[in-house]
Length: 99
Image (tube, rainbow, N blue to C red; front, side):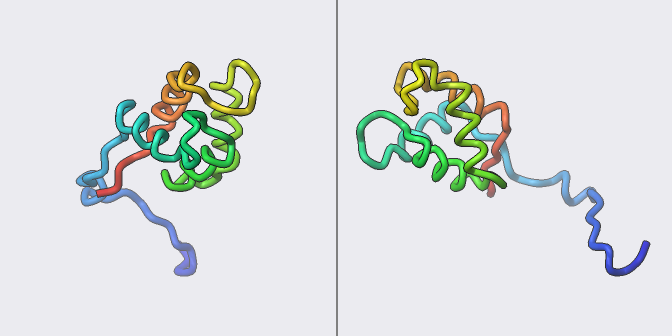
């Protein structure tokens, strides 16, 4: 393999990672924390910031997908009634807590 290729192959040390996936309850608290204006709704911008803080590679895309999956009334906000769908979406992505 040429030296300039910077490839990483998993090693036994990698499998000892201490990161674990967020639980639905943890994500619920996490998203509630990102309701920066306190209106009990999550806007696309608040979602984008939340996904950025979860270290998403493309938080804008994730926020848009989350809106598409959870915003059932089409008001461009995630309400408390729509939170379950948002949480199911986020849990499915398997964001991990970095230890």
